[in-house]
Image (cartoon, rainbow over all chains, first blue to last red; front, side):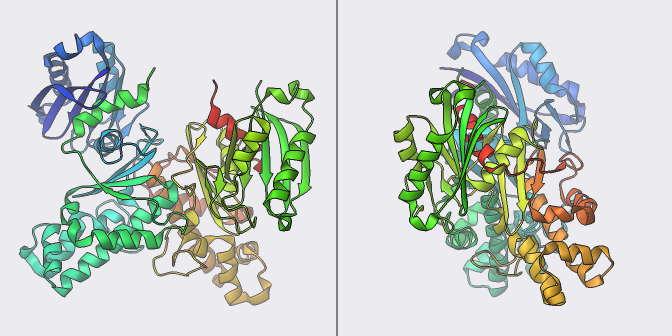
Length: 307
Length: 307
């Protein structure tokens, strides 16, 4: 059995795990990030956490094959640095991979949290056994990851899967720096909440409230839900025509309301894809919980292969 | 040096080539397809053509490493059969790969003509040296191919790259079985010609006429050109967010009018992509001519790797 270290470096907490190739966890450390102390401080914390893990299960640290790190934001996977780090001030361009490599003399890989979660789902979760998997999380934002033969396709600038910016409604709502009518502005949890609050005010706290109202027959809520699911199905169809994945794996908070929209989403998606693909691309539900650190540990596994 | 056979099986002609890993051609045979004679007849013709090639350059047929075939329509790359074959009646489900394998005792690979052309561009043409390439042809239709580390991503049902069906204008023109507002119905050569003929009648024979009129300052033509290029830039941006390719390679008849729209297309594309990708994904022009058979020969090379 081969062993890997996964680091889930978030804006709030850092988790470090020792796992094997099946994703089984042998040791875990969790600390608050204290990001306001700056990247050198956080880096030193990560080094200490890696040293704190218990390596008895694998017969010592020397048997660890590599280290993977998941971070909140796009990364340059070649240089091993974050490109934007709005949630981790100072980490933009910070040579975390280079430093960890020098410190531990092991292969180190970095990718963003959506990619890392998608990798975990593809290798160990709902997408296990499918040659290609497109993972999509519909939550506050919309993010994705494309996994081919067990490896992430990160893209030239680590932006593969930045599907929240795909235009599903030209001239539609403009959210922040995204395109007008981008998926994230039209069918994310935030978008559905916004549409709901415009009609129902404070009665809507999150997207789930809109779907609950729709389920009770409220026509305004039904209209919002139908429009949003229609746009989500357009997003899925556009991705399907670009890469024809063997399956989609869907996660994120909005999926909690899937009982309301799952059949509609499936039907619309299949209506919008090429006849030769119809009913051949299953939409699967995310299986793993809290898989950021496990997914990070899968980065070296997927990159180093079986050699 | 390693040697491969490429077969470009079109609705009109069949070409067979013997090439090396650099795409240099040593022997070529071309015949008309005579598709109306049915698949067994065409298959027998292909076998004869393969036998007719001159193998002196590689020291005999036994030194050929594999055979690749490009066909007009989506294929099941795992089963090695065409899924739809409107241009080659009878070839839907016809076990051409299995039969050629049995006949010649070599690895045989099948893919569609857009994928095969994209593979040639990625390995030998404009995309050479880029880790990932998204190839797009804007012609009568719109097709594409995604190449990662020198290998085609064909997808679960061979439909990766069927980007003509991506929705760029919800509720837009419905062409044939495609989605309303699909790219092929909005910004292909056929679409631009249709829009032009609606205003200029027979004066427009093809998309190039519309761009010529626009270049002369005709405002109706300018409006058609701008709308179409806007939609093409949306298509490119949507694909970029899905896979973040290291470059796009653009080909097809519409590119003959690129002098008119190239700068606009680049500007709009960059405006529509995530800030972290901006000016990092070059739009390149297709380099190779008539690369179907060479691309087909690259199929075994890309699939078999260097072992």
